Image (cartoon, rainbow, N blue to C red; front, side, top):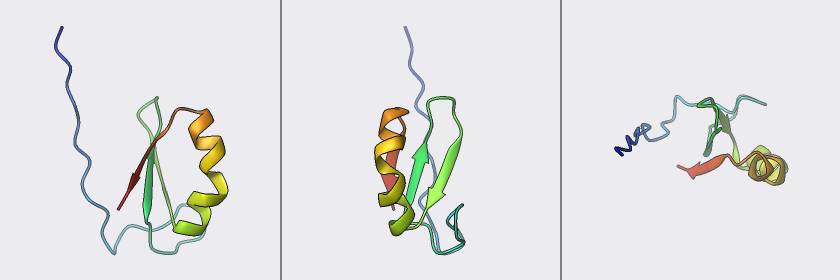
Length: 60
């Protein structure tokens, strides 16, 4: 069995929070393959629910 790991690029100053438009500090990769970007405030606010969804949280 071969496993392929996709590497996501580092967050940059151009990446913005999907909730408020502030600079993104966390990427949440969902099991379905989608991703959400959050500032620190919104990452903390949604962290419990994202973990329930088995999202991988990548801090940038």
